[in-house]
Image 1 (cartoon, rainbow, N blue to C red):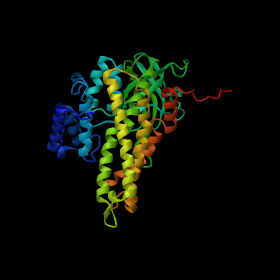
Image 2: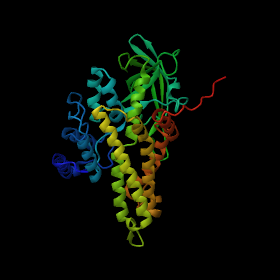
Image 3: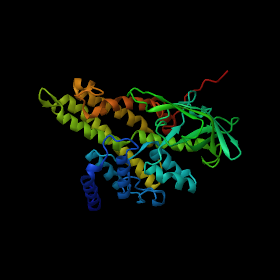
Image 4: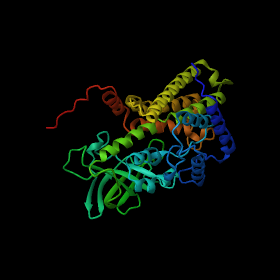
Amino acid sequence: MDLSYGPEYEAFRQEVRDFIEANRDRAPKGAGLRDPATLEWQKLLIENGYAARTIPREYGGYGAEPDILKSRIIAEEFARGQLSQGLGGQGISMLVPTLLEMGTEEQKRQFIAPTLRGEMVWCQGYSEPGAGSDLASLSTSAKLDGDEWVVNGQKIWTSTAHLADWIFCLVRTEPDAPKHQGISFLLFRMDTPGIEIRPLVDMTGAANFNEVFFTDVRVPKDQIVGARGQGWAVANAILGHERDSLGNPDATLSRLNALIELMRHETIDGVPVIEHPVYRDRLMKLQGRVLAMRCNDLRVLSSRVNGTGGTGLARLINKLQGTELRHELEGFAVDVMGEIGLAYGDNPYLRGHGSWQNQYMYFLGLIIGGGTSQIQKNIISERGLGMPREPKIQKG
């Protein structure tokens, strides 16, 4: 069995490595979403086909034909170089592919290009105080008044709402319809009058998500994706892309490489941690799981490109496996640092600007956010394995 990529792909790999070496100093380090360095890096990646690679040029992408091996080589080399592979987040990772599938031509041209460039930041208006795991029970309403929707209600756990320009939001437009029907998918600006944002501080110490309140928020009638009352289909498309993005194997590979470097530099009695059998054994187990995760991702990508289907179960496990693996990987790095692993904030002994401790707590949150691990296991068992649905207690 020959597992080599062949001359064409090895030449492409060299192109990617040459780009990384020539532009390494331009890559942003710890810069925010709005930082000019971040936006300039994103622009450079798109121009060279390392971000938005297969998105058509007319919508702001690079316009390349899908090629699984080239996509894999790009991911491998950026992970190897520990460089950012560009912007992600809810707009790029979740909304853009959904608009490509289900949006109107006008919506594609209006929203995709500025989102890819990082000029339009999005948040997701899904969960509510009474509709989290049972999202279809949402009660935020939108009533048509002439040429505008009037939105009233509340969302919670809304990540990046305090930074976002726009929101994609699930609202109930037909209150008398069954709960999975009568839901619509609206797009509107976050500076629209009637929107109030209240930050919520999470266990990392930062306000990464928020409560959002809508009081008579007026939204143009045409800012709806899909048909009125059929927003649940759009919501499910988004949730599929969300599960993929939260279990990103490329980001996990990059963190694994950073962990290996950490183990080469941290010592116990003068001996690098990576030389200690107990720690090396734990590392090899993580490496095996990362490899399995990346192979599963290749299977899903291959099926999408070739239109063969049959990857329902393979795709469903991404979020569950990805978030739990990242949490374990980040926690292992904290163990590797010993007592220094407890450092936080402005401690002078901090390693990696505190990213290991921050990501350890962040991914503990993501095991809950985006659908808890318990909910993911139900989805895998019912939709992927065809097992009987969980019994529901009849009301009354």
